[in-house]
Every structure is written in structure tokens, then in C-alpha cells.
Length: 323
Ligand SMILES: NC(=O)c1ccc[n+]([C@@H]2O[C@H](COP(=O)([O-])OP(=O)(O)OC[C@H]3O[C@@H](n4cnc5c(N)ncnc54)[C@H](O)[C@@H]3O)[C@@H](O)[C@H]2O)c1
Image (cartoon, rainbow, N blue to C red):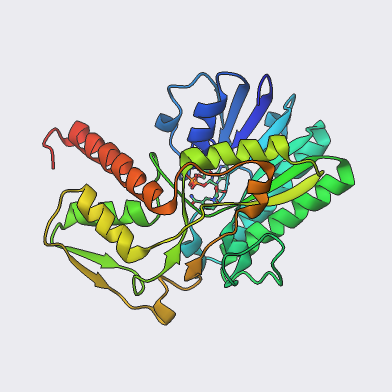
């Protein structure tokens, strides 16, 4: 991807900041973000334009769409669990926010969109799950909003000739992550090194994609897919379970004698709406010629190392006292 004017919504977030880092040298990048979970410090070292704004606000998004070639649309409520207490946020930000992005693309004649969808659109599907699996029955509002957004991207692509692609991510992990199981475990262990609470029964088995592979894959898919609209799973060929992740984090933090205990949870899930076992088939994107460099366990270990280094570094700078 070269010499393009790219708008990255949610570009100050975890995945967004890695996309910015990858793309800013050879393209003109504008980041549009309301900084609800993203941080300016994630992107302060890159030569880009930053616009603070909200995808729920049509005027703001329309203004920033002027002159853009493509949009990498990442802005979203990223927290699946929030749906337990708020069943509107996913509809408003993830779905209507995507509609606002698409409509402003149409009005400003922007011809391409890459969308960060999710494995959660499949609900509790047989694994490894292929892109053509159906019926699609998400079990969370987050999953439902991503599925609705995908449908609208497909319709906008076909109605207005916008090239669209939805990437259904597995769990993405790596530096600058601000949520998710690895981050939670590190935070918990920093508070109390003697024990670690694991939500669910610990056997939840999922695939974990390193953020460097995620950015590679999404760029590759957009450049190499030929249809006006298409969707691809983006994940790894293997899976890891939550207990294994806990052990990796404990090991990477050089801790000993940590008591791991599970909360059980309904059907062993971490929370209501948590898909217990997730493994996406990546045959479709492999057939285009792409595969991830890391497997799940490797990605988890590297991400744990990166996040521990980052969090400890920050705490040391902030407190000056070390941990
Ligand atoms: N991290 C994962 O494992 C994962 C998996 C599947 C899909 N995704 C999707 O990838 C995208 C990026 O996720 P992430 O993990 O980097 O999370 P993140 O929270 O770090 O990034 C989301 C970004 O969007 C911004 N944002 C939120 N609401 C906004 C709004 N109304 N207007 C403008 N900006 C807004 C946030 O400030 C943040 O910078 C999201 O769409 C998420 O749903 C992530």
C-alpha cells in the first residue's frame, strides 16, 4: 500500500497504532479517533494528521473524509463484555458508526474500506470455522453489531462500487494492547503476586494472532482480493487455552508459587456472551498466498513479554520506585 491518502478510524488504539506505524512512511495517514480507549501517546512519534472526533457524529466524519482514497475502519467499542450492562453501545458505535463512515465515503467518493470484524459474528460454530459457515448466530451484542456492519459494507460495495473487505479477526495480541486476557492477567498479578483469578473454567480455547501478523494480513487481503466485496478470517492455525496463557504470563513475569484459581462461570465461559471455543479456518486467506508468521502460543508469549516490558517501564517512569 503506497502513495495513498488513508483515513484510519480508531487509529490511536491498539491495532490502529500498529497500522499507523506500518503505513505512515509511504502514505498520507489521517487518524480519526475519540480517544475513548485509544491514546495519543500511541501515535505521537509518527508523522500523521490527527483529528479528534466521533464516528457517531456524521458531520465530523464527513469533514475528515475529504480527499481520502481508502478507509481502514477500526473505531469501535472493543469490549465484548460491556454488552452485559449496555446493549446499545455496540449498535451505536460499531453499527451506526460504520454506517456513518460508509455514507460519508459515498458522499466524498472514497473507493475502498478495510473493516475490522471479528470471530464473534459466528457465535458458537463448529471449529475450525470457515467463512461460509451459517447460519450466523452471534451470542453477544458486539458480535451482532459486527455482523450488521459487515452486511452494510457488502451492500454499500455492491450499490456504489466501493471495494470492501471484512477481516474477521481472532484475538489480536501484542504491544500497546489495553484489554484482553494477557493484559488482565498482568494487571492482576502486579496487584497480587500470590494468586491469579481466571474467569471461566480456564479451558476456553481460542486462537491468538500477533498484531504484526494482523496488520500484514489485512493489508495483504485488501491488495489481493479481487471481488468488489469479500470477507476473510484472520487468525492462526492453532489454539491456546486460558490456563496455558496464565502459565505463560506467570513464567514471563518470573513469578513462582502463584495459585491459579478459576471462577467456573456458566458453561465454563469467562462471561455471558463469551464464545468458549474459537478457532477460525484460515484456508481462504492462505489460498491468496498469506499465512501468519506466528502460531497462537508463540504470539501469546511474545505479547506477554511486550506488554510486561511496556507496563513495567511505564510504572517505573511514573513512580520511580520500580515494582
Ligand atoms: N483486539 C482484538 O482482539 C480484536 C479482535 C477482533 C476485532 N477487533 C476490532 O479491531 C478494532 C480495533 O480494536 P483494538 O483492539 O485496537 O481496540 P482499541 O480500543 O485499542 O481501539 C479502538 C479505537 O477506536 C476508538 N474509538 C472508540 N469509539 C470511537 C468512536 N465512537 N469514534 C471514534 N473513535 C472511537 C478508540 O479510542 C480506540 O482508539 C475494533 O474494531 C475491534 O472491534 C479487535
